[in-house]
Length: 284
Ligand code: ATP
Image (cartoon, rainbow, N blue to C red; front, side, top):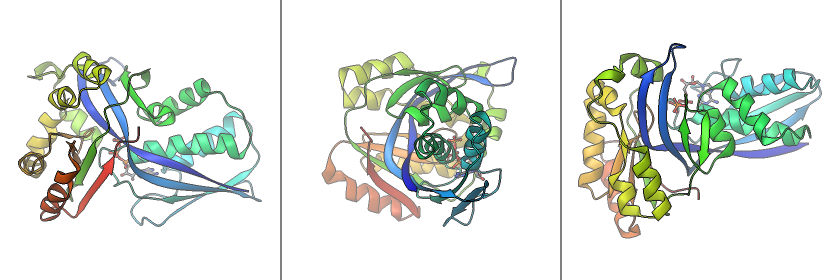
């Protein structure tokens, strides 16, 4: 038996860090939504009781460091499953980009194996398993649009944003999430974006208010380390995006665009200095 599961990328419409907790994690407030840029997972039953991960992408780990492997191992252990699985990851989401590609693969593995092995694990339990794998995994399990608090695992569903185009550009640099959080001095943050304002914008279905409410405190760290990310954001706005923001800890920058007639110009303009550019829709 073989099944397929889609693992979409997430973007942060806002990301605020409140403080560092005694357990080392940061207390955050994030508004997250999904875009139609997705990995595709093919899961097939195996005769032998092993987990095999393959991928066409040559630059991700295929052993126990892979988050899909970790998700499969966790489900097998917790539910005492004595079956094997081969998971092929057709990667489309740029890696280490701030788009939660690995987390989404882990979430898709939890959803998919629940179906493949007919385990009937309720959503709440899948979310708890997800939280063990990473802070962004629970959101990737549910999808939709959510306000995430705690270390990102406490989710409140909120209305989806008004439909628009999302131009996603990933500059060819690597950013480590751990390093960005490590360099952040939460007590020195100058400007905190407002989660309340973004939630209100979505409740009103106002594209304009949503663009005005975009904000990510991690930009302060990543943009200083990598001025080319700042240039990319400025380029996105100059070319006509209605709003632009770095996603997660970066380096990916996304632009929101309401008019389809502007999309080709922005896309082509960015392709001039960035190889990885995508024009997609929100997954609403
Ligand atoms: P986040 O926004 O959650 O910080 P990200 O988009 O920055 O995530 P990922 O694409 O998830 O980053 O990759 C981060 C690291 O995780 C990579 O360097 C890679 O080695 C490792 N990794 C483990 N499993 C996967 C996977 N299934 N897909 C991509 N990367 C993976």
